[in-house]
Length: 151
Image 1 (cartoon, rainbow, N blue to C red):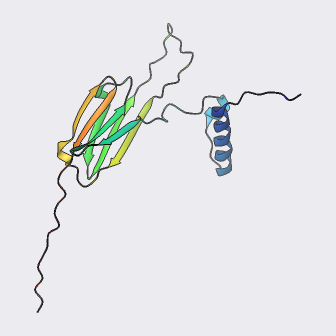
Image 2: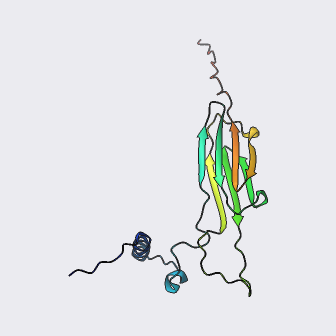
Image 3: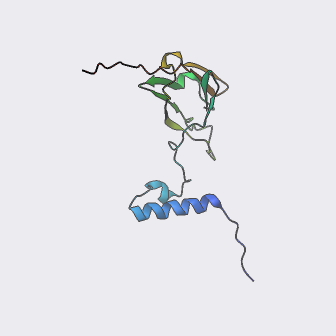
């Protein structure tokens, strides 16, 4: 009679990553020895949805537990950057954490903007842990014909 074991895809993925890192000579450091979960506190990026309308691009980033002061949005040289940090609560004597599954730490997301985006028109709002950005489209520049005199 065969033993039945429960399949755990996360553990299987963790084992695969450990073997891959060992093959490349990489180490996951003390996490591997201490038996911590697969992801560390800085291994997160917010989920982002990008939608397009005839007038604009709309970007929504999920940032639960954060405020607008924790996030910085910049546009420079055709690249939109969203960066910030979600800080973890400090453990105190009267409050002990038994399990932490949410991700904490710094993040940076960058997106190359299409040429038809007006970089000066970016509008941002933050409500209920969702950062919403609107990037207005511009008319593409018409190619300019230059007449060449042939002699």
